Image 1 (cartoon, one colour):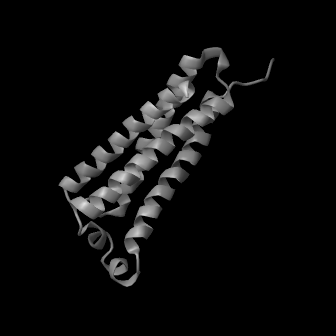
Image 2 (cartoon, helix red, strand yellow):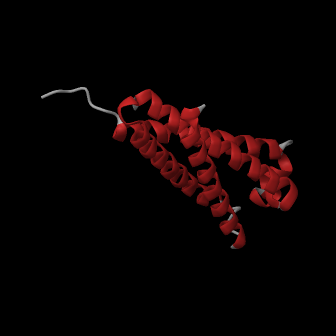
Length: 147
């Protein structure tokens, strides 16, 4: 559990940034524009990058690809779960019209559209986590080559 403390803290901080970004967009009524969710990947990527970087500094000689990958996945996983919980709470309790505003066409035609949206948010978070962690670990992995 000791090895997960730093990635969990970074995951909580990353989810806080994602929530803040979403709330800022909602102030300007831009949160229903799906285009702005692309920046969520940037926020998540930065959180994972920082988590792996600090984890590598903390672990020093014990750091390897597997530990770094785990740190990235834990960071992104925690951020994705927390943001999905917030998103669900926001859409069901704070702004109950949000889902129908998000897609006026689909919201009326598809049964259980809310569940589909919440599931999509979670899956996008986990997919972003895996892809970004794999990409970032290329920067931090140690080379076995000797010249």
